[in-house]
Image 1: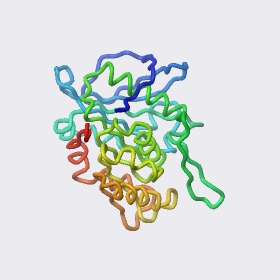
Image 2: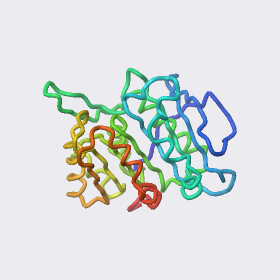
Image 3: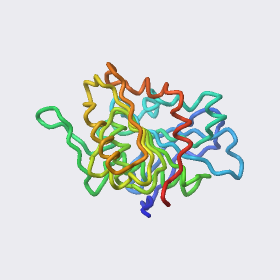
Image 4: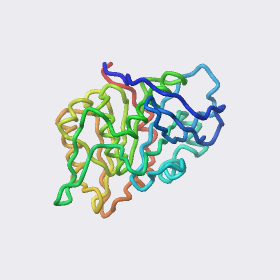
Length: 257
C-alpha cells in the first residue's frame, strides 16, 4: 500500500476551527514555499469521531496568491446547512500559484493535450501533497474516506493525484479534465470515479474524459461518466447541481484494502 510519505512543513496561521465557514490559512512547505488554502471543518468537529477529507483542486482561472479566487467554483456545495448536517467533512481548497499548474500537461501544435507523469510533481501540487499529509497526521481524519475533486486544470490534477497515490483516495470527481489512460490500471481497483464533461467543451476536448472512462471500464473499475449535451467548458455547473453527487461521494470507502 502506497501512502503519502512526503515530509511536511507547518502552518503559518494557527486558529481554532470555526463552524459553518471556511478559514483562510497558509502552509509553508519543506522547501520554504507557501501555499494559500482555505479549510472547512464539520460543525461537530469537537468529538472523538473521525471525518472524511475532501481535497478540491480549482481551475486555471483561479490561480494566484489572494487565497480567495479558488473558492469561486464548488465551495458553496459544502456550505449549505443541509449538506453540512448530512455530509460532515474536512474540506480543503488550496490555491495554485499563478505561474504553476496542478498537473503535468501541455498542448501540442495541433491544440491537443499531452500528459506525462514525471517523477516530481509541479511545485503547487507538491505543497498540496505535503499539506494533505499534515492534515492526515494532525486532524481527526478517516483515512478510508479521502476524496479528491477538481475542475478543468484541477480535473487534470485529480487524475494526477490518483496516478501518484493509487491506493490513497476512496473516490474522485474529475470535471472537464483529462489524464493518462495507461495509468488507470493503478487505481481502478481502489478508487471509485465519477467523471463529468460537457459535450461541446471548447477548452478541454471531451475526448480526454471519454478516454479515461474507457480505460477505467476496461479495468472493471467502479466508474461513472456523465456527459452533458451542448454544454461547453463550464460542465462544473450541472455537475455540482447533480442531486446524488454528495450521496455518491460520501458512500465510498477505500476498496480492496
